[in-house]
Length: 554
Ligand code: SF4
Image (cartoon, rainbow, N blue to C red; front, top):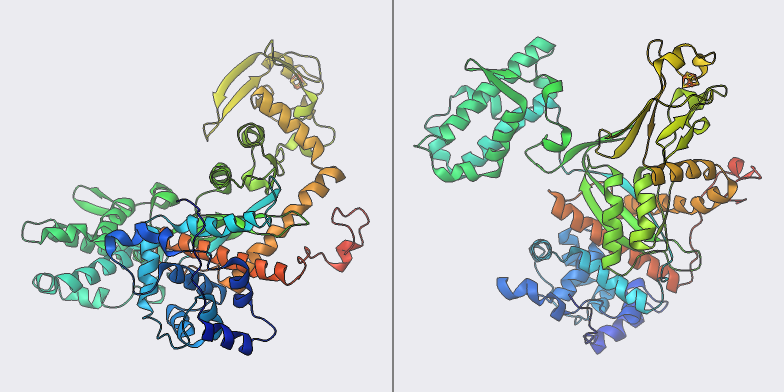
């Protein structure tokens, strides 16, 4: 969508006069409206409303109301009430003092239209475009990215609860649309079993008892699926999402042998990214990062971080919880390129960096990607006397490696690691290693010779260079600017409810994150206009005593 200038709807005179009287010292919405106008215009939403009919309230107003809702952490009802009752909202929205407002359900419908029209990111882009025009975003400046976990709006279920709830959710959905059909065959004992939520405290204890219980639910689920797929059943039942979830859950959780259903061993389950644990949000996934585990999603925020400019969120990516951070580095660069907001320097933590990205980012995007590489985890790097990789000389032309004892490698095999990345597997001669006087400094394997795993030449050389640079004060000082993104995530969590999604599903959760980011940007724009300085990254009094701290004294 083009970012053409649009006519700004004037503020009714009575509203403007009353607002200025009510807020003689100013107000953030009045300041925002005076500085940026209405941000959006109706013409920019024509694609959303050309098919489904006009909304009762202007789309540009609805877009702003959705943002203000997240700015103040309001429900739909509270936001609709604020439109009716608050003078600062009326000022920002150019509404008459007596405007009756709208029914709160309009907001939910508007969000669905925004998602259907793929306008989520554009809402943020539109604001950023205006910030760029005002010179608040530096061309090719610095940006930083980090992620945080987002809890799904569902109860976290253990495996047995997940199986029971999958069946219960399907029964509830069918009872809503085909109660008579269900009642005509459902065993009466099912009302006792599935009439209430399947909760841990009511479930049997002990491994065998739990397995039998799960297989009993499995048999019941098989019967329900057989009934749904029988000729007598209305065919549309097969299309119900909870029925499809039940079918998939049964494939993932059970196997059949000689007509008998068995619960799969945990090791035989599909990976977490392939299976859903709750029928109430089938897109939510189990995630794990360091010591944190959760069910839901992950949000990645990128923001500008030049010292002398406004800090604004420039990109938002929402993924399911199981997707690693490294998978979002390239999409972040692509998204920033599409918005013409590529930074010159991009600061990230180790989760977003590998040697390929470090090499490719300058070539493809002109970005200097700064983040620590993963340390070499081998035991040789931890023992001062041992021979680690840096003590081997590599001749890339002859494809030979010379060990610290001057022996040449026996084999050089290009292959791939478990993630499909190219690597070179180098092996030394067993005869040389067996007779080597310093063998214990090189390998702990009594029978095998020393082997090495190398990355391709360019990656290997960069990795070695980075490992030398990373402990230096110069590199640490440059990297220290990344830390501020933690404060941004903290602001999102504590002031804008970023930690928990309000909605079901990835698309709506992403919209929440985009609206939250716009709300954060508006807060920062207002602070900037009021001359409130950036908050510095906090450092403890004790840590500040360290004279060599890259952050310097507080
Ligand atoms: S153990 Fe083998 S590779 Fe290691 S230093 Fe001795 S000869 Fe070289």
